[in-house]
Image (cartoon, rainbow, N blue to C red; front, side):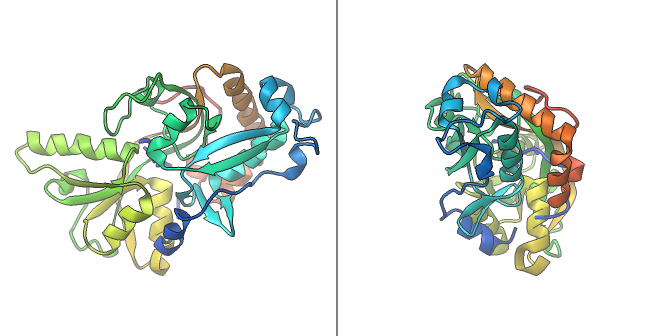
Length: 320
């Protein structure tokens, strides 16, 4: 979505040394969502556990329900993906830790990445955790990949840092070393991500310098873009660094892809919340701060080999 940013700005989706196989990732888009939170974080009546240290900070309706509904594109290993019918990965593990602080369950609901902000504003869920880059465009209601207005914008609680990486076929047969090498070539990536914005900006630079624009192919999910690259139908896929690194290490036993060049436009991932839900936003900020302080956050970073993307404080709207 650099120590990463994107997806997944768009989302991204800008930007670690571990990442997933296409076979695994392809299966992810066909599955539903799973609950990764500790059942003990909410009581038997479904209401928030009053013994949780930060339960009182939540809005009354969420305390009563005992659940925070999370919109997520659960096909973006290692940040979030499906395994044995459950959403697993960096985001679900962080959500689990936050749930213990807030006394609620985080219920991940699967959806297309470029529809998540619309779903949040339609109140289909209360937050987004989906390797979503915190950008000023998103904060202000503009899709950075397409330039389209997507509403009044969202607030972010930042919890990770990542940037965009260039993923190519193993051995780099096309000799791609930087964004400049993509001019006039086919690039496949997930639409609605910050990677799309990076590619479109680079395409404009190509034409201004007298070169051909990038032939950009966008897909609903990252596994579709990865398949095009694996088949040789594109020369590269732009992806969040943790995801690019994960696929380079795991897809085809490490024989399908490799990462080239440096990370591009590193920035924060954020938990997105509606601008009119400041109480929930502030409760989440307090919970992220708590897990950073108590060490749970560091354990999650170490588990997924993404310590380079760790943050030391939970900022609100810290993106650029």
